[in-house]
Every structure is written in C-alpha cells, then in structure tokens.
Length: 254
Image (cartoon, rainbow, N blue to C red; front, side, top):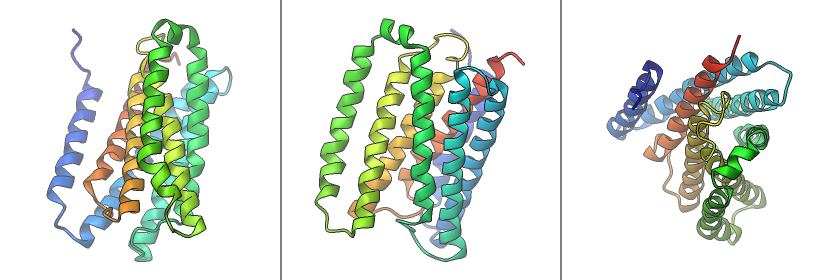
C-alpha cells in the first residue's frame, strides 16, 4: 500500500483547517460573511492558477488540450463569480446577492467544464466500458432523479419572479449533469498517464456540485447565509480539483 505523498497530506491538512474554521466562526456575525467571501476568492484563485499551469503543460495540440483549457476556463469563470459575489457583499453591502451578475459567471463556467470532462471520458471510452459503464450510468441517473424530485419540481412550482426561477432551475439542472459526469469519471481510476489525478478531479467536481445543490436548497428554503457550513463541499471541491490537476501536471512530460 502506497503512503500518500506530501502534496496529498498538505491538501488533507488544509481540508481539515477549512472544517475547523467553519466550526469556530459561526458566531462571528459580519466578520464570518467577509472572511468566508475572501476565503472563496483565495481558494478559487489558487485553483485557477493551478489549472492554468496544468493547461500550459498540456499545450494547445491534441484532444487533451480541450480538457486542460476547458477546465481552466470554467474554473476561471467560477473565480470571477466568487470575486463579483464578494464585491457585492463586502464592498456594496448587499447580503446574499442572488440572482446577480455573479451568477452569469457561475453559470457560464459549467459549459467548458462539462465539455472538458466529456472529451476526457471519450478519450478513455474503452477503459470506461471495461470498468462498468452500466453501473456508472445507473448511479449517475439515480442521482439525477433524486435532484429532480427534491429540487427541480419544488422550484418549478414556486411563486418567485421569472429571473429568479430561471436561475433556480438552471443550477440544479447543470449540477445534475456535472454529478453524472463526475460519477462516470470515477470509474476511470488509474487508466493511463493523463487519468492519474482524474479521480481527484472527479471528486472535486462532485463536491462542488453538491455544494451548489445545497446552496440552491438553502436559498429556496431560506436558511442559507454566507459562511454557512454547507459551503464546505465547495471549498473541498476546489481543493480536490487542485490536487488532481497538480498530479496530472507532474506526470506530464515537459
């Protein structure tokens, strides 16, 4: 059994630190809102940088260029969303700015990330078949069905204004798609050089999707606030994607 490398250990320590922060900060009031917003900007910014370094290592030629640069573009757009959200809350003093211009960046980030994962999966389609594409499909579709039952239908019958309803419906739909792709990607564990680290990327995508779904549920039911512990899957997701992309970058030849 291989012992975890230093990067994985550091990532695990950071993940625990995130959990401790949320556990200790719940009584901080506005300081919690500001500090959590800044934390998201920093973490998503670091993930953007790592995704850029990984993409430049892949280059612009070959089918995996779509994967590398697609992930970078999507994560960069999510970073812009985090930044705009923070400007709303910290600079403009607008709590929970939803829907807002931040959502334009958040939603725009889904397309390149989904395309990147589809290209990645297509490249390893033979390995995916060997490892149980049927089970991956059943698992992913079960998750999608659960999301439709718990979120999409309740959101479709709310009396919110049209713009809010559009955003409310868009997030769970896109997150269901990402969850399906992330679950499928998990079945590629260990398939080839570029698949190394792929399991962490898939776990990260899964966690960020879970975080987005919890946000949708929280805003729908009215219990979400900036700094709520349900934000942890988001941060862990960024961390896992960073770990996966850094692993892939190190395995690629210069």
